[in-house]
Structures are given as structure tokens and as C-alpha cells.
Amino acid sequence: MKIGTPHSPGGRPAHDAASSSQAARTSAPREQGASGGMDNLPSRTSGEEAPAPRQKKSLPKRILNKAISCFTGAQADRTGNKAPEAPEAPKKAAEFGDLPVDLWPQIGMALRGPDTYQSVKDLTALASTSKAIREAIKGDERLALDEPLRKIEQANSLITATSPSLLKDENVLRALAPMVEFLSPASRASLISAVSSPSVDPGSKARALAALGPAVAHLGAHGDELLAMARNLPAPVNVLALSGLAAGIGGLQPQQREALISDWTGRGEERDRALHLLGIVAGMPQMEPGLRDRVFDDVLGMTDEGCKARALRYLAPALPLFKPEQRDEFVSAVLAIGDDSMKATALSGIGRALGQLRTAQREDIVNVLSTLPAGRERARTLAGIGPGVDQLEEPQRRSVLVTLQGLPDEDKALALFGSRLAFEFGLDPGHDLPGLASGMSGFSTGERAEVVELALAIQQPQHRATALAGLGPVLEHLDKTDTARVLDDALQLPDPLHKGKAVSGLVAGIPHLQPAQREAIVRAVLNVPSRSQRAETLAAMGPVLVHLEPEQRGRVVDAARGCDRGPEQLKAVLGLAAGKSQLNPDQLESLAFAARAIRDQATQLAARISLI
Image 1 (cartoon, helix red, strand yellow):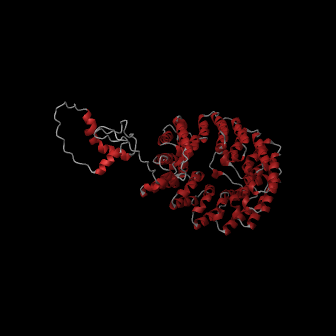
Image 2 (cartoon, rainbow, N blue to C red):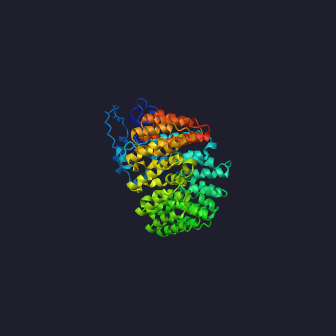
Image 3 (cartoon, rainbow, N blue to C red):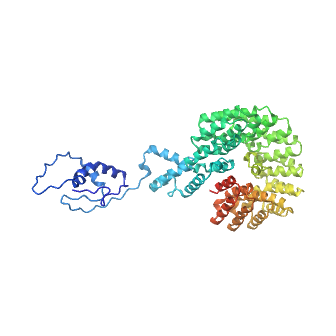
């Protein structure tokens, strides 16, 4: 009797089911004795007595059936005639219910994790399972693997082809931070190796660590290395590095979080801790309450009034995370500042937290406006109050508008527009002043019309342009008549630079404009004469590309190629990259050309990363 093996022409393929392979191994001794082994023995001559048959233990029928069933070739009968092949039974698709129950949470947690690289690896494996499993885990039988796999391939290829001297550049790392989740372990190790190189000076290393802070959750055990590097840096740059890493503090182990906050509160000058508090505040939602309390106590315990005012401004958005008695202590500390300019600095951050304060405290803050010198201090405070206007009572809103009306034109424009220091100088967004206009939704219809009149009544064109730019993001809250008036006034400004300033803010309102008005804004953007201002305006177009016609998107993208081939071009590419999903292949290539045209290698790499 000769039975086909898994590798014989009549046998089952070697990559078939695991149960079949196991059965084949179980039957191997019988195969060797019954077939393969006999083929190598000399044949008996005629008349030679056959040896006595060996006594064999009979195997249970269950094992025999399993051994036979693992082969697709039919067993030959004793005469050597091959029996007809039986059709193979159809395989039953795996089902989610077939998996051990204790594996379900593990599978679900793996696919809900923040690490896209690992999740895609898991999903790729799941792609070969049944539709039932895919739907139970992901809700989409196709698993939507194409886009993450594309990003993984491009990001890792770029890292592999990049010199370590470029990987340590802070602009490159800042662009890479959102992409770390797509990097393989080897590529992540390359980043850490580049940053930890002894050739990197302490200041550059601190900025590099701060840039990687938001990506700590994806760096796993490398988080220990990053924290150790930050703690070993000299003052004052160690404070910058620790603050940057705190933005991703949730990716560190509890003892590491404790060490980071202990070092931050116990080292460095008050000036440095106040200046770099934003990273700590960004990580506060991921901190234990005790760690947040230590930062709170450190800020309120600062003795330099200027440092304390700056720190209070940056800490204000985190007030919802603190207890009511701590919020009371915070407001008291702000109002107790003696210097008007410093008090205005502290108040300029409180708008985002007005909803967390008691009614009496909000009233106290509005009343402080009349005690500040008329001019820049009042303007900065009004600009900071903007996001909390909807939390004010009608008499308090009326007081705010009266204060605005009494400001000189330049300060009135500052109050409405705020400042965009973060955008203009690459700083953390917390450095921005939101502007009183940002709270337009909190004003009544009549109050909104009053704000528009105040902006249009500003006499100096350069200041009126600033005020109109502040109204751009809130056009949705204006009626059609006021929207048209704002737009027409901005486009009729005689000086191209002033017009460019107004348009740079108005592009945010494109979703709420009529088609002809959108075309007018696009033409104005493309005609901005200053390369720097045009780059800033093009960057602001990224989020609103979806509201433009394809032909308009093409013109906007092509304009990015006409900047200075340096930092300004990087700014335009980074901004437009926010809308890259709306671009067709030709437009994407045009934007990629703009990135490749940047002369500085590190700046060019940062731009290319943004397009992945």
C-alpha cells in the first residue's frame, strides 16, 4: 500500500490547515514502514520465503481516520488500484464566537490603541479571517488598510533615506511627531539615536526633545531615554525639554511622570518655568491630580510678579481640571497683581475659563477693565476675554462693548483681532491672543452688528485691516448684509499690504461665502504682493480647500511654488497640507514640487513629511 505524502503529486499542499499537518506527522511512522521505507529495500526473489509479519498494535479508529483524512489523494487499495477521490468538504469560515472569550478584550484593546503601526499589523493579520470577525472587531469588512499602509511605507522609507544629521533638526522632528505612530520600531530607534548623539549641543537637544514630546506615547521604552536626556541637560534648557515632554506625559510610566514634575518644579528659574509652562498645561489632562496640584502650587507660589502673571495666563485654560477652591485661589491671585500691565497679561488668558468661575468672579473680572489704563492693557484683556463672552450676562457684555468703543483705533483693532504670535513665529498656540471677535457667537444679533460698525469705523486703513481680519473666522455669525460689507471694505483697501492683512483673516470665513465672494477672496490671495504675507495667507487656506472648486484649489496650490523657497515656503506647504485630502494627483504633485524646491535640506524634509 502506498499513501501519498503532503509533498507527493496526489498529496495535500504543505501549507494547508494545521490540523492536517499534525495528522500527517501522526501518521508518518506508518507511511515510512508501509511505503517509503519499502521502496528502498531489495525486492524478494521468486521462491524466497516471506518473513513472518510483525505484530503491530492496532491504533484507535479515531486516529486512523484522522490520519487518512489529512490527504487529498485517495488511499490505494491492497491490489494497487487507486480508489476514486472523495470531494473535499468545504471549509467553515472562522467566526468571532470561535475565539476564546478571554481573547476578545485583548484583540479589541490592540485595535483601539494609539499606535497605528502596530494596529495595522494586527489588522493585516485579521484581514485573512472571516467577514464576521472583521465586522465584529472593526465594523468594516475591508478593514480600511490602504491609507495607513501607504503612510507607513512612505514614512519609513523617508526615515531610512534620511541622514541622521537631518533627523535631529527641530523642524523635522516637529513635522515627524504626528507621524511617529506610523514608524516601525527600527525607524523610531533611528530618531532617538539621532537626538541622543553627543554631537548635538544642549540647546538643540532640548528643542528636539520638546518637539518629540507629543509623540512619547508611541515611543514605548524610548520614553525612558528621552526623559533621562532631558533631566541631564543643563539649566535653563532642561526646563524647555521637560516641558515639551510633558505634552505627552500620558505615554510615560507613573514613576516617570513623578520624576518629570519633580524635576520641573524643583529646577530652573521662575522665568524659565513660566515661559515654558505651556507644555506642562498641555499634559495636565493626562496627569494624576496630585501632580497637577504640585504645578498649581508652584505657579501660585512664584515671587516674581511678572513671571507669575505670565504663568497664570498659561495656566488659566486648565482651570476646569482643578477644584472649586483652587479656582477661587487662582482668581484672587490674578486680581491681587499690582502692576496694571502684568495684571492685563494674567487676565488675557482667562477667557477660556470664564465658564468655570462663579458669577461674582466673572463680574469682578469685567469690572477690572475700567481700572486698567485706557490703551494696550485694556485691549489685551478684551482680546483674552473673547472666548468666554457667551458666559457673560447682558450688563457685562454691554460693559465690554462700551470699553471697546472707547479705545483708540490701534488698540480697538488689537482687541478685536488679538495676536497670532504662534502662527507668525512658530510658537505654541497658547501664545496667541484669541481676540474679542472670537466670542461673536456669545453676542446678541444687535451686539454683533455693533461690533461690525466699530470695526468699519476705524479710520486708519492698516488698523481697520487688522480688525476686519479678526472678523473672518466668525462670518458665520453675521447676517448676509454685514458679511458683504466686511468683505467689500477689505477688498477695496487701497494698499495691497493692508488688503493682504485683511484677506489673511477673511479666508477662514470662506465656508460661509457665496461662490462669487469665494472667487474674489481667492484672487485677492493670489495677488498679495509680499511673499511673506502671501505664504501666511496661503497657509490659512489649507482647512478651507474643501469649499473651493477644483480649479481654484489648483491655482492656490500653484501659488505656493512662488514663495521664497525657504521658511516662508515651508509655512505655505505646511498650511496647505492640512487640506491635501481635497487635492487631485496633479495638485498634490504641484505641492510636492513646492516642498522639493525649498533650498535648505532640513526645511525641505519637514515640508515633505507634512505631505505624507
